[in-house]
Image (cartoon, rainbow, N blue to C red; front, side, top):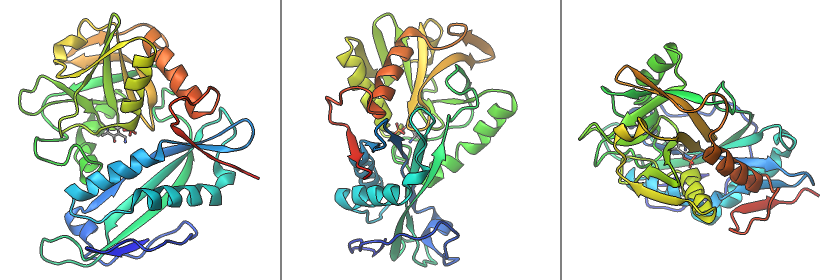
Length: 318
Ligand code: PMP
């Protein structure tokens, strides 16, 4: 789908997956004017396909587009395009329990621009790929390291939107962490350098007793759709959930820590290394809270329990 600055997106078309043509002076290549989304489609036992909260991704893309001076598809255009793309690729949605189809909507400044300015033209596209687990550990605990030097987001910056540059900014710390055997990096705020922010591609939760805490959304953390859903699920299961500034020291005496995201779903954290000290949570497998929340969320996403929240969108396969 294409759109000029200040215009509306026209209806798109299906194309075979392959390279796309881009002007060398496209806004996205030169000035990073790009946004993406990520969501998943699951196969149900009856063969139908479920999408999880696609309108939330549409809204987040629209908010991000505003920050990045880009036009964005309407919520309806976005959701319809996702549905059409998934249906056209329905044979790639894995059988129940064998993974999911990852859906990647991408919005970019595709028009040519030489001086620094928003691009004159935009392209919205969607591609898909079947996926299994995100971390090589699968659903086993992951090991994080707290990053002290590098930050993924600054106040007033673009950390709160899903722009492509945010991910380039984490590559250095993430590659170094992986080379040392860690699964990923946990970032701190860059002002006080003591409050938890998030992991390179997921949000973080800390459990102490019946209270589950997660960093408040304040412009430097991506407002995860899984985060938002897990907060509601946890509250419906009787947990107290606090969205607040969470000092890194709270990791030291937490009962459990877990991460949430479309790709990672709910991943238990087995250990966190902070200032050279390794804090471990449990020995093998999920902590009880992460296990409970993972179980409710995934059964909902796969259509195995009643969707009382009306979060799933069903695509009927005839
Ligand atoms: N934080 C970052 C930086 C991310 O890239 C993601 C993945 N989109 C998340 C958090 C989790 O967001 P969601 O639950 O919407 O996938």
